Length: 122
Image (tube, rainbow, N blue to C red; front, side, top):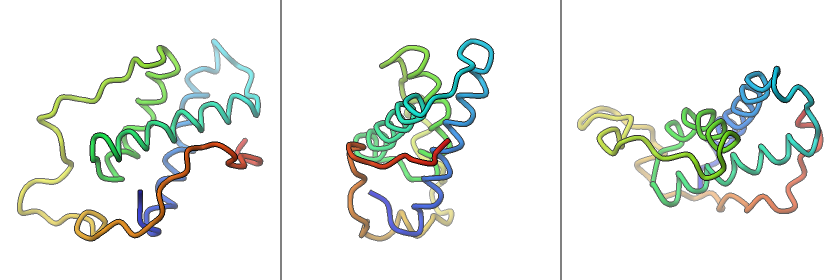
């Protein structure tokens, strides 16, 4: 779903979304467990897949949206809705675009999250 050059950005974006969600929850849910980290990681992967496959979004837009997506899903599962379509791209016509958007996606698909080792995420 992403080229190899974007993998680090995606991983960093997921980590940032999870870290921000725990910071927000510090008062209401102060305990950080491995199970909760894994649950939030899976929510982020599900969101990434949905935004990439179903909405056709570019990686930078997805990474920028992940913290809000995770927060919405934690507060009310299934409660996230994409922003209005008038903002369907981060790029204006005629402006430069990341190479990721111009070529074929040669990386294998993002796994479904089952069997992913999350040891050391927290």
